[in-house]
Image (tube, rainbow, N blue to C red; front, top):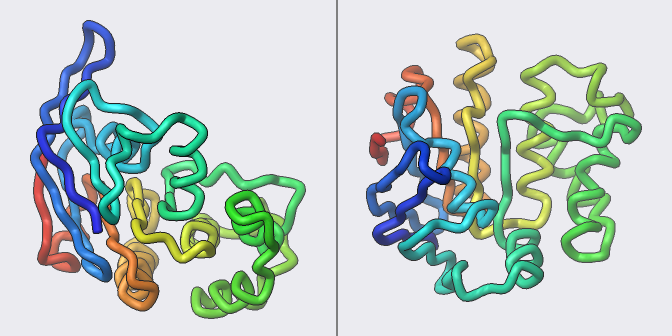
Length: 208
């Protein structure tokens, strides 16, 4: 579903990164670990098409991201890639359900309200549909981010430090939910993290 070859990236004359090749199939999870400054978030942004590498190849379901124009890349990302970022970037004036539905409308022009309710129910958020994101705990906000990332049934689900700000109970809960839902929806799941608690949860892993 996703594979990379010889990815290199540099921030001007600053930090330079040579990333290991990775691969993950539909329904498979990959954990990428590494300490601060190793380029974990940079790699995730490259995999999601938010950054373009200086060289190398990112293939998602056979599509080479480098071959896409900016407009086509935006459309491809909306339809094929789900992102769970460290900062949720919710629309503060919209409630939980509306934030998830908005993601479907932006990608497809349709409001997948029933699908959003189903996802939020699976993530144990049914009682919070009409609350504003600011009224939720950090763990609940993270689960809303997961629902939003999955609403368009992406081929690739990317999560950047999804558990770093959570206590043990919620960290393991979110990790298990990500793995379970990726399998359920047939998405390849790539998590980048420095959270050592997740190492026993994901046997398929690599380090930077």
